Structures are given as C-alpha cells and as structure tokens.
Length: 501
Image (cartoon, rainbow, N blue to C red; front, side, top):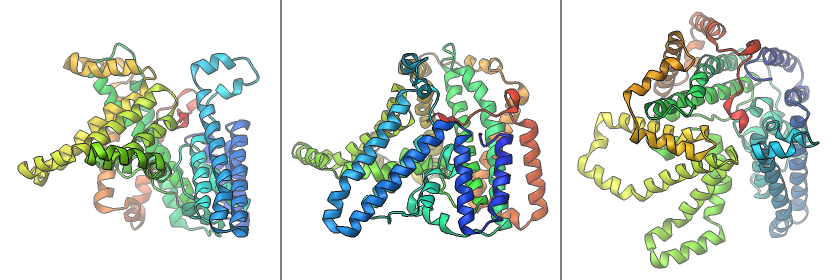
C-alpha cells in the first residue's frame, strides 16, 4: 500500500476521520491499529518482524529499567550491559541476514524451499525501525530516556505508519511523548499536512517516476562518456524527487495526525562541502550514525591506543586518527545499511575518502584563500555548490552498479571518451519532447520552492493568509499530478527507491 496509491488515500482518510472522533487513549489505539494494518498490507512477514522488534525492544527496556530501580549506579549499568549488547547484536544480525538473502546467490540457494520467502524483498521498513528501536534501547541503557512501560506507546514509536516506508529515523525523546497526548482537530495542521502530501506526490509521480525511465535506459552498457554524465544528472534528480517526495508525504501524513517528525532533507543542493551536504541529506540517518557509531568508536579504547602509538611517529596525524578511524567505520556502516553488495561499500568508502582528504587539505585551503580571497567574491558560493553537486553525483552513481568494475569503467569514460555527440542519446531513452519539457518545468518549480523557503521561510504559512490563492494553487497542483503523473500498469506508481534499503 504505497503512499501514491488509491488504497492508501482511502486508508489515510478513513483513519484520519476515526482518529479525530475518539478520546485520547482511543486515538492512540486506532493509530496503532492503523499502523499495524499498514504493515500487514505488505504481507504477514512485515507485521511479524515489526512486532518482534517492538516486543523485544520493550522487554529489554523494561528489564533495564527494573535493574536501574533495584540496583542503581554502576551495578545497574553492569547488569544492563548484556541486555543492551544482546538485543543490539540480535537485531543487527537479523537485519544483515535479511539483506544478505536479497542477493542472487541466496535467491538461487533458497528457491523453492521453505525459506524462499526470505528472498522476496525486505520486510517493510525494517532498516528504519530497527535503527529507531536500537536508539531507544541504547538511550535507555545510557540513561538518556526513561524506559517506556506502556507497550502501546513504544509500539507506536517503532511502527508509526508514515515512517515505515522510508523514515525519517526518530529518537524516542523526540517522538515518544507525542503519542500520549489528546489531539483535537486543527484545520490548519490537517491542511498543512495534506498540502505537503500533495507536494510530495508531485515530486514522486510527475518528476521521479518519469525520470526513472531515462535512468533505467542509461544504465545500458552502451552509454558511456557524455551519456554517463547525463546519467549522473538524471539520477540525482530522480533520487532527490523520489526520496524527498516520500519524506514530504510521511511528514505531511504525520502532521495531519498532529505528530511532528524530524526533517530529513534541509535543502542539500545548497551545500558547499561534503560535510555540510551530509548534514542536510538524509539528516536523521546521518545524525543516528554520528550519535551511535562515530562518537562511540572515536572514544573507544582500541582507537585511543592506536592514536597514542601513532602520535609518537606522526604527532599531527596521530591526534586526528580517532576522527579518521571513526569516520571510516561510520561510512562502512552507512554503506552496509544501504546494501550488503560491493557497490554500497565502495560508495561509503568514496564518501569517507573525500571527507578525509578535505580535512587533511584544510590548511592548504586556508593558505590558498588567504592569498586569493576568492571566498569574498559573490560568485564563489555558487561555484562551491555546483562543485559539490557534481562531485556527489559522480559518487552517488555507484548506487546503480552492483558490479563495481562497471561503475569505474563508466566513470573512466568521462575522461577517456567524453563527447558532446553522446548527448544525442536523449531521443533514445523512452521519453518524448513533452516529457523532457515536464521534467524541466518540474525541476524549475522544485528549485524555486527551495529557494523561496531558504530566503523567506514557510510557503504554507504565507499561503494560509491568502485562502483563495491557496485553494487555486492546491487545485492546480492536484490536476498536475492527476494529468501529468507517470503511472504504470493499473495506474499504480512505482515503489520508492528507498524501499529497497
């Protein structure tokens, strides 16, 4: 039941009506029931895995809370360590095994057997709610949040249906308490939520799914040089419109129910360096990795010992070694989270390499800019954004090639076989001149909206004070999605890209 289907629209509206007609505890129960029904619509295994993660996280938190009450201090922490470590290892193992089962080798080995169901795609949202539940267990262990004794509240935290498709990844301190409050119907919040859902549908159906046709065609081995450059541009548009469109729908749906989810994209294409880019792109995953991987690794005993030994020979590098070591582990984990195939490991290492090189060259950058003063020029900020956009496009294209050798062959063709004549392939990609016109207009609208939001703040707030214009624009956007959306067989939209992760 994808966000862009008629089934979801009917489900969402029915749930919304029932939700606002019930008292506080009834609201929580109906929202949980709706979330579990949403998971069940993807199949029994999706609901079973969600329930298993939820029950075990609640049990681990409950036991650790009891230990804290009875023992306190260091004794409680020592008693809780096996529970925290055991739960974390178990759930990470389950997640990795599910991802491994999606490989061609596993599919062939398990085909036709009782375990063949393991190869038919990942359970809905498992990559997202596993990290979310893990943050809860780790925060309870560290004393950052109180153990949740109410199972229904924790179950809503792990299984809230807008988050199941592709996040964002919330922390219990951000989200948990919101499920204990009575929500009265507020026209403005419901309207804002539905506006954002419509905007997300526009990105997904009009832009991302249309662009997916060209991206699929350009993956053919014949397209190298300039055609590969087009692929990097087109894929950047596709994944941005697809991912942010899905996140807009998730945040909009949550807002309609009076729930605030964390922002996951903060205008990433305005970034001027790779560190800034990853604070803006998939921000909740980056924040999770920073909190639960980067910091623990950087202060761990093995890394401290390694840093101490390195400082004897290379004092400056030795001091930076904990940061670099933690960066390496963090990007390896991030790559493996996306997929256990070699291309995602390489993708993570390429990001790590660029970050480390940038940090090592920082003194050189400072000397250069102190001499030439380019940073003071108005054009330089635009140059930095274009540079970062193109660099990230080249790295991101690794997503598309499980065969890493093929990715590097295409990448090398940019330098050995680039020709403007390669762009003639545009009329061979399955899109018409009208399609390209729609894409250009759609990208221009997305860029304009982002620019206005950066410069002037919320567009929805401005439109709320102008109801006639708001209704006209909303109706126009609805017609645009209805008439220009890219629909497949049975008028169903394609899955979101991040469903596969």
